[in-house]
Length: 188
Length: 190
Image (cartoon, rainbow over all chains, first blue to last red; front, side, top):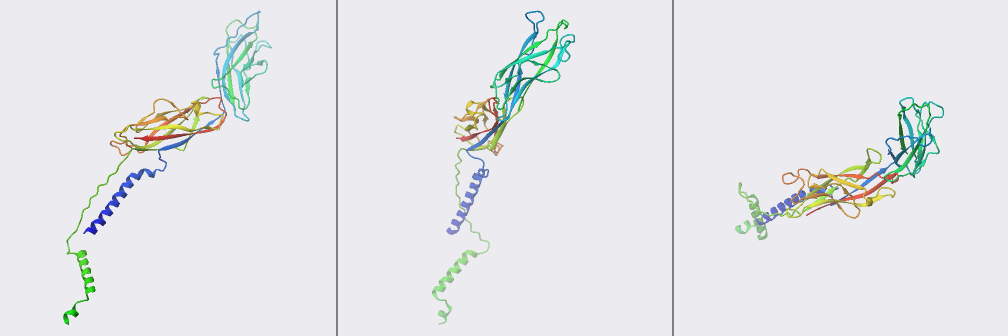
């Protein structure tokens, strides 16, 4: 009688222990779980460019002698990152809407030969300013600034200005005339 | 004469007797059951514990306008048990390796931040926290008497999850290229 009791008790004890271990050990089936877990955070930084025109409306005015040309300044802020090695970038402008109404200045069809809306550029590094006086056009973009490889602006952006000059032709009828200039920045 | 020849030798007789006795025990009279009950008490001491599992990697990507922050989300899986008398537990995160190579973002400058959302057990971190190299920052607060899975007084979800939403400043001063850092999540429970 005693031998049978001992065997039964041992078998029962082992079965219970196995069941308990199985229950407690369920979490070990998910090998990735641990008291700590580590992740690699990755990011690819690519070339980017952005521009902000700080002068929403540029007023061209004439001062000094009669029929002095109209002048004005457009301020801008640019942000840029060009690729290391072979990257580059540019800022251009184009007259996307000619002066209106008619009877005054015109970029596309000036009333007199030599009439023009021209400009010069001033930009802070890493940009290089356009060279000399540029004549704006409605048919194509014209340069404002260029960038080389690995050009990177400040986090808040860097400044630039376009200084305008509009011929003051006596042929223009009196009145107010407006046109639209679009600036474009690009980066590779 | 006849009586001595009829009986087997003593040692054989003893063996036969033993066999007979054993056979008697095994066979027994038909219909008789002989059972014995043994009871034993099993005690299991379940201590507070916790484990986490996170993806091996996460990639932050640029969306929207130029120089908008890089973003990405990561789900932290966890299982936890906290005692009724303890102070609960937590999941924290710390950067264990700075972004490399150099020339790009750095954790030390505070540009890698995160928020927490969707905790299925406990309370996710509040607001935006900056990832740190020098100290662990909170992701999840686990209350006392918390337990994962099974429903009832425990959570129905198993494992539990909480989402960390990362944001990395896109600074024009970063050089172009790929950069990686390591972050480690740690769970504790009392």
